[in-house]
Image (cartoon, rainbow, N blue to C red):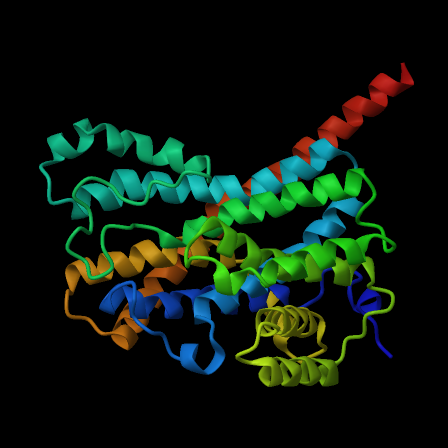
Length: 355
């Protein structure tokens, strides 16, 4: 039996491509509410009970649960861990927020530029959204006539929960709850939260936390139990079969999370010929994720009667170009400089210890 531990050595895996596919699925998912309004029913929702975008985000969180737990376990210090997380999220985020406020906003606002730039909400857009907690969705006069409304970047809401999960990894690691003996407790709490999903209001903090915490916890558990967890396509089929059997019951959110999370990790570690060649290109998924929504909203502002599939086809190439630029000129350099800074800090600590 091949285990996750055997496949998790090194970085030669399929996760760059898998994350890119998930980010593209989010772009596809958003096309329906962006063309028909926020209450539009997406394809497969009736069949699965989940939006495509929600399932894709669950994939992201399952992958993060595994690799963030691994990163914390292998950290040189808490500072190194925090610096790595900041370098991964904030440079790209700062860039998209600035471009939104300084370029996209002036192009699409219906207000005179003097009024747009003198409005306090324009200048609050970047600092407020950098907090991640209290999101500011719109800019003065921008996209107000779009079917979905004035929201410029509806994808950013998940970043707050991502950071919350990072914090929980730190807390659990420091007090020893991430050890194999205690991991069932974390899973039990995350599983318990899924039973609140049917009662929670759509879009509420409770629903968001309950939906995203379990895939992350499953990813973390797979890392903790990596010596015993198999890389098995049969297990994927079994979990999806159980999820289908549980559809319409209170157990379904839990089974859906287990099926999606394990399938994501299985695909990431599966030995599929030729797929790993994608790793030579880079990791464009974060840029794809944070630029897709504003690009699609801009397309809708230009072509008001655009349908979902034309919107997808028109938005994908521009979003991909922005994602490549973000990775090449912002995200990758930030991560490289983080490695340099960490190396310097370690050297400084060694020198201090030697004295």
